[in-house]
Length: 380
Image (tube, rainbow, N blue to C red; front, side):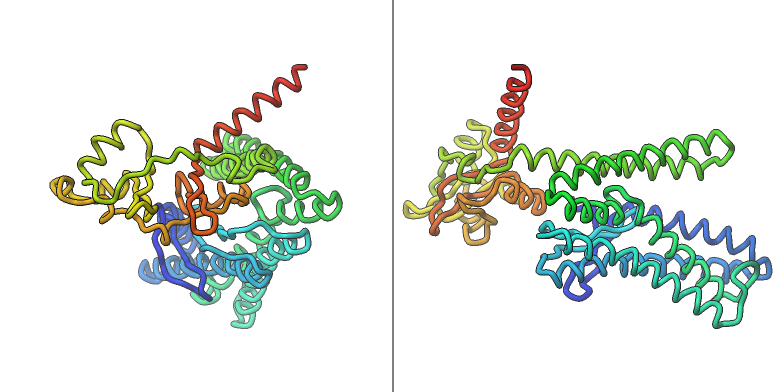
């Protein structure tokens, strides 16, 4: 099941909301209602909750603007953007490729915080233009604008902390990349810095919690934990790319792919191929040519009562609709494609002919072999 809901497209970019967003949206709305009730005691409950809901919606629209700025700059530099997803702790732009150089990386990273600060500044100027004070009881419009101004400037400043996965960490990586000339080395520097920043957040949150800050301290510690996990994951990603450097899909693909004749019934396929081999992907042949792929997913989608009478070629995924790679495709690029499309294997195709199959297990075996060899070299 997908963990997010599609909202639509903005500038051709898909916008999704992760289910965790609804939790944080409710918490922010509830918190704003309490804050507005305390500072605007003359407001009725209807006005308080209306202001809280409106402010929460506008806040997430400003988060969307932050992520859109990243995506639009990336696309302007030729990098395809798959989607933007809003989740509990903000948002993320899913950019399909890494920036080709340090300058592009810097521009993509820095535009997000700049956008947030500009939005915040305009909100505060608008509140002042309405003639209200930025503290204390105010009209509804001034209250909403003031809060949005402060939170967007805070968001921009927070994102400039120098550690992955924050924008400031990517700015740091861009600068380190420009200085060292190595993207891998720069990523290690940014990821390690991100881990240090995260540990400081955790320590500060725990200290504040025991100092009487209550849930506020736990929230800071939770943000630190999230940052630590993200920074560690990014560091592991760098190590993974380093371990797989130089490998092509043709080096790791399996050539002994099982082929199933198209007229074979789904029932016979399950009994004779799927259960006996334990494999998860098969090629379907029609007139001695590979016509498509078949996985347990297509079998499960078919009513069991139809298995004996349905040929596998009727439920297969046609080869021209299957994501594939060439023998010369870098393994790291193939792995990114698998992760992005939630695939376990990819056909390796050359000149319209299937050469073999690249699976996650192929890549995992190669990683284990390289890590074992690396350990032996260090031991010697």
